[in-house]
Amino acid sequence: VQLQASGGGLVQPGGSLRLSCAASGFTLDGYTVGWFRQAPGKEREWVSCINLFGDTTWYVDPVKGRFTISRDNAKGTVYLRVNSLKPEDTAVYYCAAHRAYNSRTNYCLGGMNYWGKGTLVTVSS
Image (tube, rainbow, N blue to C red; front, top):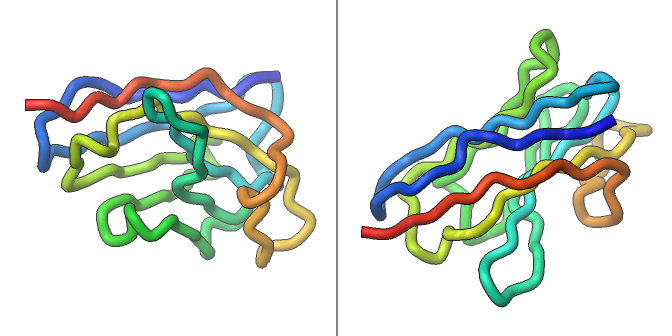
């Protein structure tokens, strides 16, 4: 049972990337999925979260309007489109999942059930 994030890389300020999160050993159906990041020397923070149906999303203020989370339940994948990247977005990005008992709760604010290995996003000119 694991999650795997991918899609990171080196990008110039103002650039874009699409991160993907896929599960193996279980299906993401019925799970709220979130993206978190940890910058060098800083604590991990949650960035965005999407409910089990994909019709409700949450974002932290610094990324609102620049990041978009989405999911394709048929493919069992959750995406994070990151636009207008800034150097301060540089971090290892992780995806995580929490069993969802309703579609209204932002489970990303508490502990998550499963974590994946991260993917590094570096924003630099």
